[in-house]
Image 1 (cartoon, rainbow, N blue to C red):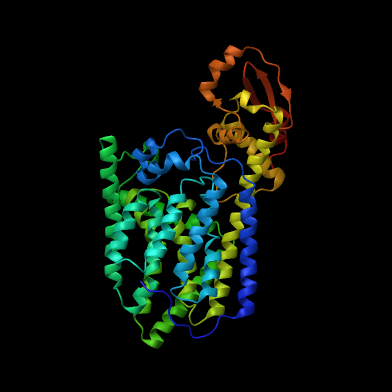
Image 2 (image 1 turned 30 degrees about the vertical axis):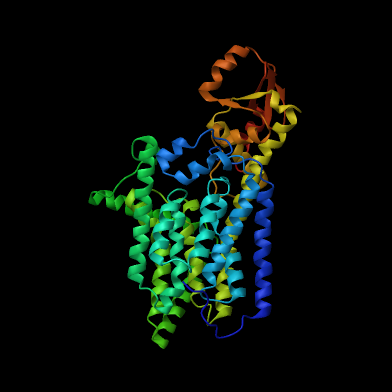
Length: 472
């Protein structure tokens, strides 16, 4: 798999520097918010004692092997490595069709994918997948494509297998040169996926003595009948619609994509280079890949899983980059800016809500390591308080899960260096043993300290403000 096709004109210098400045500014804002995040998702490597259950229910054998080392890895360093690896992968994709300047623009635009920032709350889990993407970008030109897909199909099934779908766009240049046929490429791409699934099942069988047991809450629904197929199709199309609806400039984004597609096909007809049509079909396969796979399972495609869709929308302008650098750049900026707005809003929400919970909690005692927490609020109270925080600070969130359950709040306590948290039914026996408590009132929390326990509930005045002024 070779590198760059010849260019017909130099990349416009002024447009290049202005575009880089805009994209770096957007990425800088996102990095600032990420760097000021201290609490992560409750099922991140940082907070779970074992990954064995995830191996059995999800098949991520590579993450299982890396878990003992990664659980102690600095989360912000993991995110920095992930950003760098994905940037290198994206740069390698673009270098097939444009010069170094165009590839840099594409890589910076790709760092705006909403899936990246929807997944950032689990900083260590996708690290191996990002590093594999970088390795795949390096090896794509050095391995036969059949071995390439088989090898990485097996490895990606050991971490986040939806990342495997991204690899097909590393084959755009060989398709255009005629080094491979689209049908052969897709056959070996599918073979790699099947090989990865089969290898994962065998690994789990060797470790656990049985095949993978998908968690019941996922509610798989195989399309074994017409009603099941219709139901799965509606779910796949509904998730596609939802994944696009988060973009504030949907019409402009889709218009830019369709214009680039039409321009690419016009050149194909004008020059009679039928090979170029295959690269367009390849980008369409990339966009549809995750939805087709989830149709077979009857699952909803979350934003953090929709990497192929969001990357494909950037790839369509890339198809015209060789002849129309200005159109490529403008379309890239339109899409990247539309991606960045929900990213920034959701990161600000995530960082703001966790910081509000964390700052007052950290101020309660200078020795958090001496106290465990009994957390009394339930999901209803957490939702109400979070709604109030969102209203007070004007937060918007379209790409991140909320903190509306006690288990999702627990990482705040760990970030404040408290050694443990109990809530719900597990907290009741301890609370009864402690007997009557005198609570100290804070702005957000009411708290009591007794026998090594910090008992927390929300300030009722704060929740009364919610009921009194729900539209604030």
